[in-house]
Amino acid sequence: MANKRKRPDSTGKRNRKSYPKKAGQSINSPRKAKNVKQKSYLRDEIRLNKFIAHAGLCSRREADEYIAEGRVEINGKVVTELGTKVSRNDRVKVDGQQISLEPFVYILLNKGKDTISTTDDEKDRNTVLDAVEDATGYRVYPVGRLDRNTMGLLILTNDGDLAHRLMHPSYQVKKTYEVTADRLLSDDELEKMRNGIELEDGPVYPSSVKRNKMDPFSIIITVFEGRNHLIRRMINYFGTDVRKLKRTHYAGLTDKDLRVGRWRYIKQKEINDLRKLVKLETLDFNKEES
Image (cartoon, rainbow, N blue to C red; front, side):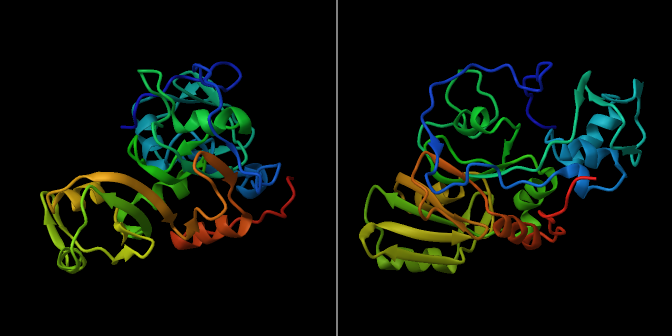
């Protein structure tokens, strides 16, 4: 089950403390979101779980759980049958809150330190949503997580299908990290890492391990999996700790021209490249709403 979220108010916004902006839109970003209207993209009738996912609430699998638990209403009637279809004009509520189709929104954030990769934080610490949500006006959710002190690329979107597949291990999404250890790892240790090391939850075989030519203490590691704290544990394996960790590449996207703490809308071609990567149909951004 997904983490508990604060319910949105009547305007669709979550009741959440306002923070001073520490991050902003990249100067290279377009002024308007690179999005597509779901009403023109989706069929007249769609499965209920897809409707919920495309409203930016959760993934389809989580939506099925909501339906089975009797938490979903269509036009005032509780529905528990999976596979139920709805039209664009039906009124759908989840936990008593009406939801509606939003445009798909895709954001790339270069997360800074001391930022939580969750939608809410009980200690009122800054979250990734504080960096973008008030500026965009849409409910978006992080695709996966980065540790509080890990910097780097993080996608935020309301496209539940894409988010779910990007996080699913079967699609082997490529991720590259720059990690600085407390001590210099030897060439022999790097070679051992390249050949695979055994962690407590199984072996890990990185796609690439190389030393940063600009900083011998810094290592560039590429992996196709997303186990918790994986890169940190790979460094810990050699008896040292991580001093600095940053994700520089994710699913073909890079941090080029995107400073730490800044964000940008993902370009239309990049969006469709992401969808093709995880075997989803591409979006037609030129299609007019009917």
